[in-house]
Image (cartoon, rainbow, N blue to C red; front, side, top):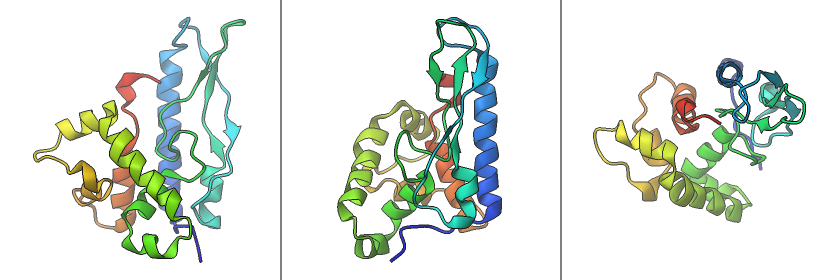
Length: 177
């Protein structure tokens, strides 16, 4: 039984490029503590939930640290590939929570229950969701997240719909780190 979703190379590359853009935006703002310039301080991630072909795009979490000696806070820019410190890729979490078949096939039902709780309790009360919900013409049913968001995305392919969903879920860039 597979716990992975198959991501095509193009989608994985686009998510990687989007994260690169987010890290460069954060670098341009400078250190949130002292304002000095930021250096790259990427670190390896062993992500779960993506196929072997996509692993290269998920191998490193982009991060920054202050150049000023003595300051050095780690800055983690928003990501469309990762959901905080979770080991599964954000796309895999979204796909598993939305797939009815996931409840039958995944042996880790408690994990999916935790992820669904995150969508419906944590994400539903977050600033990112509040901003996203404010741009919607009709209310979003918080009890059916993430499916209720995914159903609103219009794109020519399922992969692009997932990419749009993930881009909408990532923390807003304007709110800093």
